[in-house]
Each structure stands twice: as structure tokens, then as C-alpha cells.
Length: 443
Image (cartoon, rainbow, N blue to C red):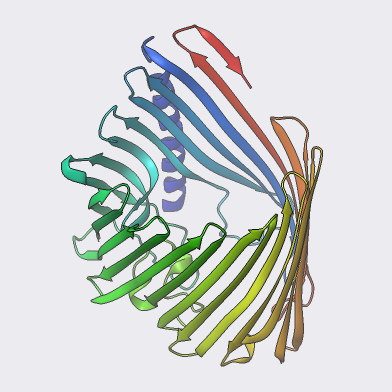
């Protein structure tokens, strides 16, 4: 009963938001510069077999809609909607799979000055430590002397609970914000926090973080973040990446990451990422160190190499390293290949990986093939040689309609033979109206 009520609430939210946005945008004064409606519909039929050889044929439709009103004074109002629906043409793969969802539905006002924004509705908030989908309010504005601030408040949008966590909750209320100081040419430094309370007012989540971007020289970029969980009293994540381009044709990179899963995944709002998930609870702490290089000094040819060292609490250490070559002629074709070695402490982390891929454009047709072979040092679940082959084709019927199909065949330690496919149709539309000239066009 509660689940049906939540579905009806989401549907009501979407319909209400569309109606409100339409009335606000359509009633815009004639001083508006332009008014537009654009959207895209993706219809996808997926095809695969379950472990017990039953056919699964889910049909999805993903709809995205945008309505924009840009005013002559530089301000503007826009509405964005994204949702999907599902119909099973054969056996349902999981009885608890939802039949649809509203991914986002929000109305935004952009002020003419100070990058000020007010957004209300179902939205994704990405501000420092916060990376949340909420039903609520978001505000942001630049201030004097390079300072700026943002704030949000609302209810967490919680995914459907999984079998191992039937009482999964996301907190009745979530709120937080970020303050920052920046020079757009050289740096940005931010501090952020979020808090979520249960209905009984007890703390569900309480997190703080700092983030930075440094650009001291034209060839150097440093980005990073550190986030702390004040409920579990531990660092969730410390991640930093440095890039250096000594030449226009050469790019070097280095990165470091430390993640404590028990702190990082405590009381998240996506049940698949819960620390109670038996897959994610295997290793408590993950550290990684990496380096990369890419050279584009030869016309149409890119040479790249990378190295990554992983350290896990329970499964030990592993190093992943190798190189890639890509040759590309714009608007014609692309071919490439890669070879990597994974050298770890367990059988599943000791293998050679080979990949080859190619794509070709012929008029209105696009063709792609991608093959990956993983050769284990020792057999895993009786499989020593694992591979995946994917083929895809797309055709542009018109500038508004594109159709395509993908087929994937794989053999791996989990499936002896796994065949999956999909067909896809994408329809786009764009209607614009200029108030000053009174013209209207549809594309």
C-alpha cells in the first residue's frame, strides 16, 4: 500500500510540475527574447535469457523534456522533466522491478546577475560532499570578492529496497550547502556539509567535505576532495588528480584515492550501494595510486599508457597497467586496440586483457564492433579464457529519428554463454518561438 502511494505521489508530482511549468512559461510577457520546447524519447527493447533460460523482454521508454523562456533582461525560466516507463513482453526478470519512475522534474529561475539560481522539484544536487537526488529546493548565487554560496533542503529520493535490506530508509529530511571562494582563472576552494534526520529527529547522515581546483600554470590542473562522515567518525574519501601538459601534444597525469567503504557507504540513499550489500562489504578500505600519459604528436594517432596500483584490506594488492593505440579519421572511421595486465593476489585478479575496437561511418549509417578477451593465469570457476564481443549499428532516418541495434555475446566465470541484445529508436523535437518577431519554427 505504501509503495503504491509513493508511485501515485511521484506521478502527481510529475503531472503537477508539468502543468505548473507550462502555465508559467506560456504566460510569459512579450518582452521575452525566446521561448522553446525541446525533448527526446528513447524507446529501447532489451533481450536476454535468465540463468534458468527464461526469455526476458523488457520494453522501456525514456522521455526527456525541456521548456525554456529566456527574457530580454538576461533572466530566464526553464522546466526539465525526465522519466521512464517499462512493460515486460515476456517473463519479468524480478518481481520487485518498478514499472516506471520520475527521474527528475524541476523548475528553475535564472537571475540576470550573480549567477543566481533557484530550483524547485525533483532534482540532482551536486555541491561538494552532496551528490543527492532530492524532492526539494536548491539555491545558489555568487557573492562579492569571489565568494559564493549554495543551499538545498528536501526529502531524499530513495531507491527500492533490496532483499538483504528490507527496511532501507533514506531519512525524512536532508539539507546542506556549500560556500566557496574562487578566481575563475586560477583556483576554486569550497567547503560543504549535509545532514539528514530520521522522523524521530535522530541523525541519519552528517557529512562534511572540502573540494578544490588549482590552476597555477596553463599546463597544470589539480582537482580533489576530502569528505568526512561525522556519524561513523571516519574519513569517507580522499581523492586527488593532477594533470600536466608540458607540450601541446603530451599530457601526463597522476591520481590518488583512499576510500573507507564502511564510512563512505553508511546510510546512503541508493540501496544497491549500501554497505550491507554482500558484494561491497568484502573490502573495508581501498587505496589506489595511478599514473598516465597520452601522446597525440602523430596526425590522427593517439598513444596512451596507464598504471594503477590498488590496495585492499582483505584481498590484498593488485596492479593494473598497459597501453592503448587509437587511429581516427574524423567523419570516417576509428580503429584501436589496448593491452593490459592485472597482477593481483587472487586468481580473479591475475590476467591479461586484450581489447580491439573499430567504428565506421557510412552516410547515415554508423557501425561499431568491440571485442575484449581476458586470459586468466589460473581458471576461475572453470573458465580460463573469458571474452565479450559487441556489435552495434545505427541509422539516421531523419534529423529527428534515429534507430539502432546492439548485440553482445560473452563467456565469463559467471556465465558460460550469455547473449544480450537491444533495439532502440530515438526521436527528438525542438520548437522555438521568438516573441519580438512573432515567428515560430519546428525542427
